[in-house]
Image (cartoon, rainbow, N blue to C red; front, side, top):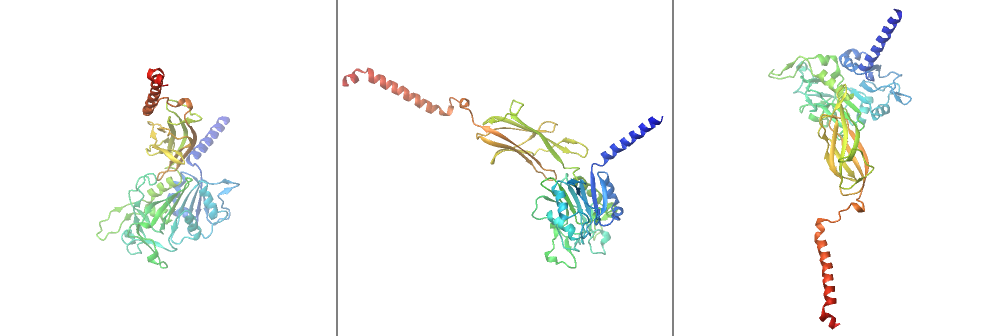
Length: 436
């Protein structure tokens, strides 16, 4: 009886361990100005805890570190500490940038009075926040509750039209109070939420003539780095708060005709941001690359010019639970030697994850490269490169008689016949013989 109880107990522990490992697929470090933020942003952190085992730390703690002995301690990083003058422990600008350079994902929330510690991280990623103590003001798109205020509690719905990054447009506009930023000159940055055309940045210290205005002001943006690391920037820490999640929204209208929403779209949008930023959606992988001549199944050490060749690759997408076949139809393949000689689309093979392209090798020999470089908005980048040798025809592989050369063949044979007739006539004609 005692042994059976022990076995049941151990099995229960094993089940809990497996369940826990399935629920939390990694570790995340959350840096806060104060641990009290766990209460004011409880809903957001609860949804994040379903994905990661979170380690909440005050941003000035002397024990902070992202790595130890060359190994990273965390998979993701959340920085909700816009008022921290200097991060504690081993959290420095270089440490955060190295964390991103090594393919990890980061979520950063700022505020109008954010410090240089956060601004420098954003600047290194191409995000330029507005001056200190600057708020976004919009006198035409503000919440009705801010009627007697400065109109800094704005109502925004200019979302990026991309279902991969923003999964399902929120049913209600979002509330935003914070600082804007610009992302000009960096095509790796995505403007997820823009201000309206009537918005502008303002503060008692700034000059309105030099401040960003209109749709140039970005409220939330994201970086899709070349190494597939993702970093999302929000100019408002309040955007993720329980207060904004549960608040009703009514865009001010002088006629009083604006629609009232019982709940803002902040929570829906924040969930999309978390899923995309931390690699739970919009993630592709490729593999099982193979190529061979048409009609064969095995690759050759080299190919010959003008042969028909097939290139196949498997492309899959992560749906949050498992890898499934990717359904895109715009994957291109290039066959390159210095310049692309062939550029063609890969065609999906039925319902499988295999994509195939068939083409004829050009009449040029040398070292060629199969190059697949797939870069689409919201998705991770795919890159597959494989080199092959293309050789010319052997001496016994050339055509013996070419149709286009028939006139030359005819002229050659006609000359032979003419020489033969002339020689015969010259040797056997009696008059020609007498003259000699």
